Length: 223
Image (cartoon, rainbow, N blue to C red; front, side, top):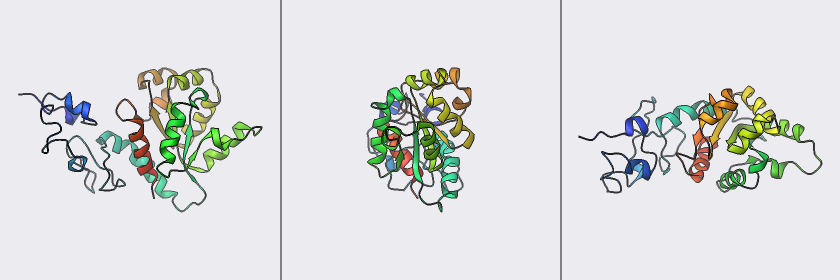
């Protein structure tokens, strides 16, 4: 009898459930995965139930599906956000990205976050012409609840060249407030150029659509 892969791999999307030898025939039926609302969730004590979980900060009405690994990864960041909830004048997210991605993946993620009412520090709009970039980056980091780094092939190249992105990462890593978002590359490739950053768990567009990554980040920072 075919075994369900959910306890190990999770059913994070339609394609992953369709690839499961036990569940592919049930996917889309009313008794299967047709509704996110029927997904198993974490209890208030954090115990695991099935191959998906609902973090305590995610509204019951949310259609998003989190894996237990994602909940474990994001929980410390949520706790940090809650501890700083009383601080005023903070952006929700500092977006670190490679210069080459400013008009592509970085802007896409920025726009998706803003569309969900997330305030984002983004160099393309927050650093005016002639302003000292590193100084403005320092200010942006100090005024943000958490930082995310968009890990792309372009960013890996910039890190190797010890560019601005490498300096941003150094500060973010020191603050322990960094969520990697891996896009069009792998953690294995990241580990070759930045083992410290690769040691942090985050979100990946290989498992989530970019829109779902933005939605999960929006839930994470909502107070």
